[in-house]
Image (cartoon, rainbow, N blue to C red; front, side, top):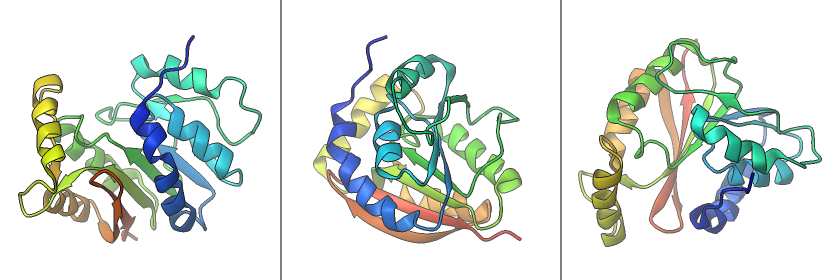
Length: 199
C-alpha cells in the first residue's frame, strides 16, 4: 500500500518533537491515540529510540499506519492497535503517557467526553496526556485561519469543531487531570500537557 501523506504532519513534526523531548524525558512508553497517517509515529519513534511508541486508530486508518511501520528497523514501534475512544474496553493497558494530535476537533464532543471518562477509570496515576491542535480561548478564535478551519470542520466533520481550551481543561480536571503546561506551537496550534493527579 502507498503510504498516506499529510503536509501538515510534515510541517509540524519537528516542533512537536522538540517539545516532546523534554516532556517525555522520564517516560518509556507512549500510546498515540488517532495516529492518522502514521507519519508522526514513524518520525517520533526514529528520533526517540528509547521510548516505545504505540500507534492506534479506528480500523479504517490502520492500513496506512502500517504502511509507515513497514520496513522500520527499530523495535520501539509495535503493530498498531484498533482503538475507538468510545469503545468500552481498549485492547491494551494505558502506559505512562498518551499523545494525540489533531483529534479533539475531528471527533464529536461526546467522544471527547468518552475519552476523558475512560482515562478517569483506567489511566495510571501520574499519567501524562499531551494534546496537540488548535484551541479557542475565552470563546474566541486565535487567528482568522482557525476561524476558517472551524467552518471547514463544520462542513466535513459533523459534530467536530475547534474546542474551547476552558471546556477541555474542565473536562480533564473532572477526569482527574491537571493542566501542567500550554505550549504555543507553529500555525496557531497548541500543545496542552495534563497529568493525572489520581491516587
